[in-house]
Length: 194
Image (cartoon, rainbow, N blue to C red; front, side, top):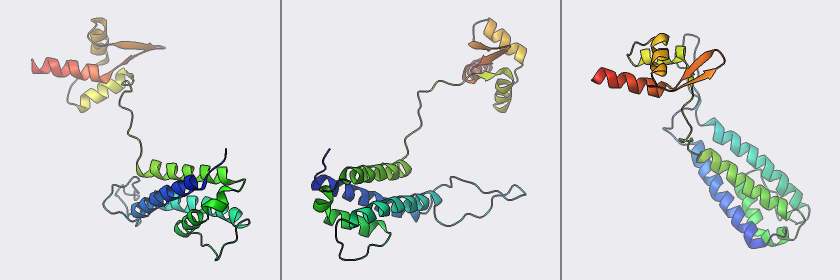
C-alpha cells in the first residue's frame, strides 16, 4: 500500500493535536487520584505532583517516534538536529511529508502515527464500562454479608427457602448454591415496606 503525502500530513497533525491534549493532561489539576498511597498507619500519604500515566506515555511515544524519525533522516537531509520532543519531530514529518511518502517505510510510519494517536486517545478518553453485563452469581455467605450491610438480617436457610419457593433464582456450583444479590435485596426491601 502506498501512502500519499496528504495522508501522512493529516495523521501527523492529528497526532500533534493528541500530544497537545496529553501535555495539558500532564499538568491538569483537580482530577481524582487513580492510585492511593498509604502510610503504615493506614492514613493517606502525600501525592506526587503531576500525573504519572500521561508523563510515562508521552516519554514512551516520543522514544518510538524518535526512532522512526532517525531512520527517515538517513534518507532525507535535515537542516538541523531534531530534539527528542514530539513537536519538532511532527513538524519535521509534516514539512517533509512528500519525500517521506516516497520511502519504503512510509506505511510503517503512517501506522505508527495512527497507533500513537490511538494510545493517547485511549488514555485521555477511556471507554465507558460495559453496563450490559449480567450481575454475577454469589455464594450465600456473600449475599448474607451484603444484606447485613444494607440493614437486613437473612440466613442461608432463608435464602434456600426463598429459592425453593421460586422467589429468587439460584444456580448450583458444585455443592454450593449461588444467588443474585439484587433479587434478594429487592425481595427484602419489598417485604419490609409492606
